Image (cartoon, rainbow over all chains, first blue to last red; front, side):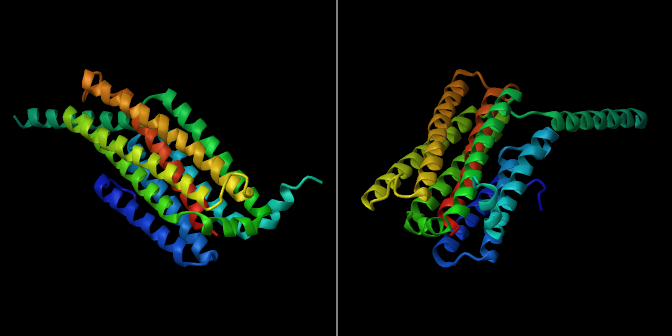
Length: 95
Length: 207
């Protein structure tokens, strides 16, 4: 799935995924399924750019791991923020 | 003769192995640009955390806010930024072939896409104004303006860096053998694209 790809095909995939996001924005009401689709889309697009446009797939492992991690953490935060908003409010309210 | 061929093959194997090992230690653009990139990614992560906190406190504003934004502008900006990143990636392939003409052409296309982003964003801000939207409208729009304007500044100086790279290629400063500076500009430009990959769905898609 994440092996060497031509950057032409990566670009086309990224464009199509953007149009899918636009379609979701205009048509779907947000629910857990939409949140997960959006989070996975962010993770996938980020990974494609990191691996193939930045060419980190064969570069320094620490840089590659850090950049890939970012696109695991942010999508996970989107899902968690949707599932547990009260917990965020509790943690960020001054008493 | 067979022994000579075997020795050559073994040498080639060693070369391929060491090249792979060297690629695995390769830091595209050098460490200094990565200090900058990680700092910028941290800055954007802080903005995303602020978004999550503000959304948890004001869910109605953050559900309603994206419906008032110009989705077309957001989509067009995503498409032009992805295209500009693609052009920069193609320019890197061109410089490795020592094809400086193609490299410069791809970099100019990247700048045109960057300029298109800035024009679309300016039009979007103007459209917001005509719809009565400003940074003070509510917390959602404060977060929206702070995040997108900050990102817009990055596109502005990123475009200036790509312009600098074009003159570098034309001067002969970057070649197939030595193009670290161009690589630094390329990875920085991709970072700007990565930030928008997150900003677009957070502000325009999720409700």
